[in-house]
Length: 378
Ligand code: MRU
Image 1 (cartoon, helix red, strand yellow):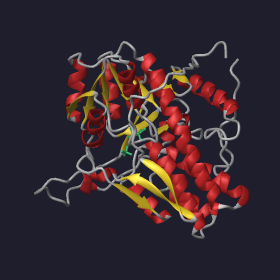
Image 2 (image 1 turned 45 degrees about the vertical axis):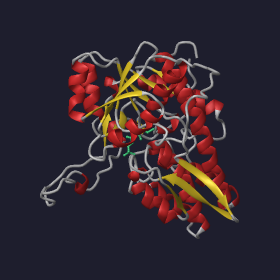
Image 3 (image 1 turned 30 degrees about the vertical axis):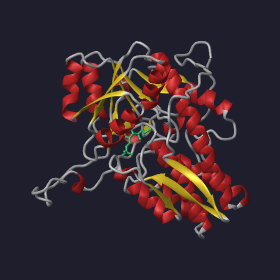
Image 4 (image 1 turned 135 degrees about the vertical axis):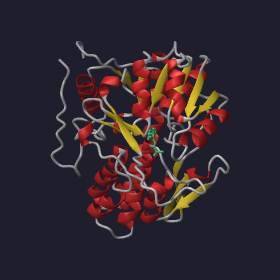
C-alpha cells in the first residue's frame, strides 16, 4: 500500500483503567442461553439488566431502544437470529425478521448475516450463537484499536464535542467516539467532553454524561441548539461522532443532528471526525442516496405535557453527513482520509485480506451480488 491515503497503525497499549460494563452478553443457561442486556431506557436512574429469551424479545428491545447503538445492536442481531432459527423459522425468515428491526444501522444487517453464514454450514442454531460471541469479541478489540488510533490522531485536541452515545453502552467494548475519549483519559492526556443533549430521546444527556462521569471524565452538557455557538466561540477543538452506516464515498449516517454539527464545524474550521468499525461500511451503498433513514413515532417529539399530541411531526432518527464535511474516519485499521472513495476501498481491500473468513464487508451471502470487489492498492 504505497501510494495510499490510508495509513495503517498498530499499537499494543492496554487500558486497565477503563471500567467497562457489558451492555450485551450471552449467558449460558441449561441447554440454551439468554441474551442479557442493559435496559438503556431506564438509564441514568436505574442500571438494570434484562434477559431476552427469544427473537421477538430481541426485536422488541432493538425497536424500543432498550438496546441501542450500532455496534450493540449488531451483536444483538446475531443472537436474535439464533433464537429465531432455534424456534423454527427458516434462515431467510429469521434474517428478515431481525435485520429489519431498525433500518439504518448496517451493523445490524451485518450481525445477522454473520450469524446466517455460520448457521447454514451445519443448520445448528448454536453456531449462530457462536457468531454473536465472535462479534462481541471482535467489537471489544476494534473499539480498543479505534481508541488507540483516535487518541494518537487527536493528541492535540483537549475539548471534544460529541453527539448521541457511542460508548460502553453503544458497543460491546469501550466505544467508538467515546472510546477515543476514554483512551485519551486512560493515557493521561487532558480531555474534556461537550456532550449534546441529543433530542428527542436524549441519549447524550441520559447516557453519555452518565458514562463519562462514571469514568471520571469531565463533561459539559449542552442542548443540541447550543452546539454551533460552542463551535463558533472556539470552545471545541474537535468534533468526534459515531456512525450507523458509511457509504463507499464516505457519506455517513448517524444520529439526527450530526449533519448540523458537521456544517457548523466546517464553517468554524473545527475538524470533524467519524469513529467506527468497518462493519459500519455498507459495501452496497455508493452514497447517501442508498442509505435508508429510520423514521420514528411523533410521540417521541411531542413528549411534553399539554402539547397537542395530534400535531404533525417529522422525526427521522438519523441524518447523513456528506463526506465533504468529514476530516477523517477513525477505524481499527487506521484513519481514513479524503478522498474517501479511495481510502475506503483501500481499507476494505486490506481487511478483506486480513480477516479472510469473517470480513463483514466483503462477504455477503444474503445480499448476493454485492458490488464490492476487493481491490488491491497500487
Ligand atoms: O438511535 P441510537 O441511539 O441507536 O443512535 C445511535 C447513534 O447514532 C450512534 O452514534 C451510532 O449508533 C454509533 S454507536 C457506536
